[in-house]
Length: 206
Length: 263
Image 1 (spheres, chains in turn green, red):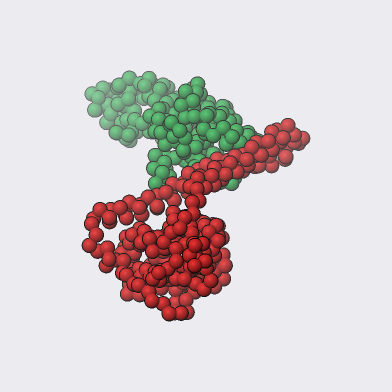
Image 2: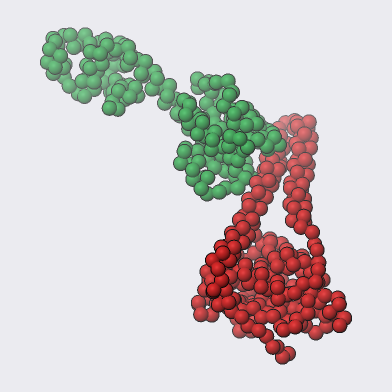
């Protein structure tokens, strides 16, 4: 996944502005996809590439805040950088509260625009890396039997084989066999590594 | 000059008026404020698109120029787009101008007393909110003038509201705006609006009527420049001066209606 180039999705109903921003971002070296409206953007073919959305706030039909709402209801939502003709404070606050990466005026210097896009892409890449890590960890943990999972949690909690054997009413040798199965399935050797994996999988959350 | 004026305290005069009239004034006030706000907001949005596009295209062109060799076809296309957006921004301004012009200029003989009464009614709320006294004096038997009542009403309204804004910081008992209409020598009438505020910095007096010049934190700097355009279209003059005893006075002149001027 990480080998995919980040994509900047630009959404603006104003054809001239859309063309100009697309041109500028391409000249700077970004991979850009342009969309004339929010609906067109939402209907794009799915992709695993990291990226962000640069959108006009005020558009006929579905506006920038509507788009933000629609995206937040789907998995893998991209961070949004809003561009606005006039920065009115209530709208800005609303957008930021719902996780907008940035809020710029349409005539903000290009350096600010690039910086906001880079921040948004970095956030998305980080988010994707965490998601991938979590999914991998969850897949590994899912391969454990319920008993192995119990033993794993006990081991992480720092309990001795003898204590675990007592809890389960099995021999200490049986616990050792479980532990070997766990380290093989999870591909982790030390207790510290097992703890990190369990945390990544969300096993320690509850 | 011997002036036999009439003073009527607007607040007192209207104290017994029905609530309906109060409501009407409030509506008039609200629509004045919101119209200006809407106009400014629409203008900002309409202009931000082409201006933003021009800026982005220029920045893109600068980046393309750094490429070796520069993509001349792309640069030509960018220049075409910049020209189109420049024309588009000009078109927005042109449409706005046409919109403002739509109300045609219809001069007719009109009485300044009637004009003052309308403005007094429209600004009554503003004056009472500020605990200000609004004195309106019209010289008895003042000649009628030739003009467009709606346009002149706009000028007078603007001056009175500015004056009320200017006295906002003064102690309550000295908050006063005085409007006076009187005959000047020759065939002119002069209207003055004086306030008891802090006055105007002498170096700003000349710029006051320039478009987009404002001393108010949220002002657009449009009112006085439009006022000047209107007064000059009527063949009059408008200017501002500081009062000897503090505050400022705005004055404008209007020629008296022809049949009275020659009488």
